[in-house]
Length: 98
Image 1 (cartoon, rainbow, N blue to C red):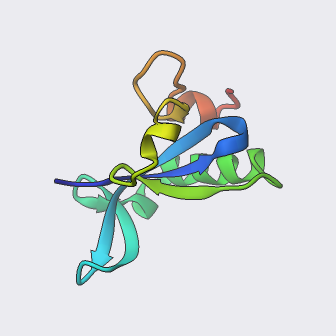
Image 2: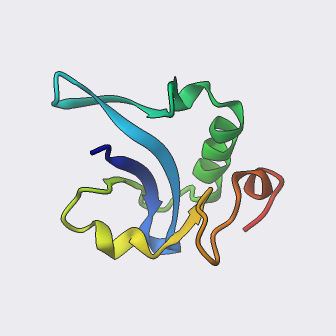
C-alpha cells in the first residue's frame, strides 16, 4: 500500500499533497513521488508549494502521512489539489486562489 504525504498548516486547516513518500531502505524519507516521477520535477506543483510556504509564513507546518495514527484529524482540512467539495485545484491556487 502506498502512503500519501501532505504538508499541513493546522492553524489554517489547509494542506497540499506531496505525493507518495519515498524511503531509503524502508526508514528515512528521502523524497516524494507522483506516478513515475519525483514531485520536485512537477513545475506546477513546485510553484504551488512555494506559494503555500509564502501563504502560511509564520504558521506551524507539519508533514503528515496517510498512515499516521492522527491523520484523521487533518483529513478533513481543505486540500490544494484535492477532489473533495471545498478543495482548490493546483491551477487555481497558483493563479492566486484561496
